[in-house]
Length: 639
Image (cartoon, rainbow, N blue to C red; front, side, top):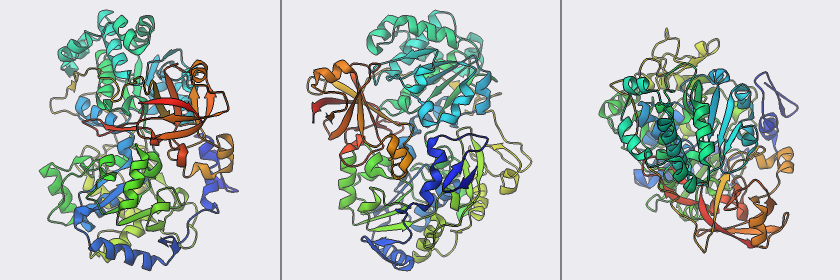
């Protein structure tokens, strides 16, 4: 692709509307080009000196770092190192915790390793059937759809999304019942004799325990809980018996039982004999630009580079040797817990806008206002940056080199195309400037390739081993991790011979349906679910500044079944209040006949009183610490 006239010209890979308009933002009049101190422009030296002086006045764990899944591998790696070496704090996590953490936890316990897709995307084209559980790529990732043109498509989603419109079979469960549906599908597969007994015996362990739970979920019982007919459950399982893939997305994961929900879909895939076989498998679709690589190299509270666990003594020793330090802090808090921690006095935010994107967003905003010091690195004045004591203007995608790792585990070179505006520096330069002022004069290079060379050594021997990858190899080769040496060809397909557990077997995990943490009641009789739309992305801080995108979707709206709207005294095009126990959102009413009568949908891209996350429930998954974004109890009121 190329940048032409402020827009990105589509290349052979194809782009969505967000992609072909992305160039507009690079020279947007709202672009930040000088640091801000208490809202006033200052020099970089003045801003860096101020932040460093304030940080030196705190204890290490009173300072926290919050990163982002859009940072390059080099920046994510450097951020994790900066927190633990320069700040000496354990308090670091990132917004990817809100994205794929449940799938990562489920993948690790089932397979011993988490890589979004353990196979190339192109493998999907030859499948007979692909099941998408809680994913809407027609809006969130349109170029992905070209890989789904051949297979029959099963879509599990409470809404009749544009993706569901393309499906051979759409299963429309009540919000918060995906786990029950997965158990019902496993039950049907067993009763109908469609499970692969030889595969279960030779390549897995734990089936009997998982079946004892699923045995209770016969199709008619599952229908009563989920609303999905027994006939459709049987049809789905019959379609999956063959060369098939089971893929999960945020709709399955963003629950207080998200890890168990993904485990239930993995159990279904294992029972059918899909993972670790050419032409079939299980995978998870990433949600951010570097959703995979962003969680592999150390900006997550419990991880070190190479997907190492921070509480593993061997992993700690390896990384300490690479970094030249004698100690490291231990695990920190997960994202929401970190954002709300009252003993944190200073917060540094990179590549994220949690005032809009975090659950119970009003509480996060209040907590940020109570901090002694809030520092934000961004390139526009996001809602979070607007609250900051110090804002640093940083480079963007077309203005920097680096690497990113896509959902297949394939490492991609990002090449600098433009010089940034005068006064703008990279995140690596920002970290270098702060580290040197905190007394760490070496170890934070500003050249991405130098950072990557150290990342290679730090990841060597880890699950996500990048040690055999070089910038030079990426010029001519497609490399999927692990790549343990420069002679190794990479690993596009994992698990063909064995899974990553010591015994080589995949694990069935017994899980049961618990339902939403906050079920509907007389006061709040409806269930709200949230998601993305085609024209906007994440908190909307960038896409809402692009005229073409804002014109297409200019304001907050709520999708409601016409009968539900009528009972609430609402009309299409009018305003409604959507109210939960945590907040109130004002939105334009859209009457959608395909909506379930017990559910409403809100996009989460809008600020102010239109923030969907004013409503959402911060109840956390006990394993992944994922908040329950996808379902909360609400009522509708006429505005």
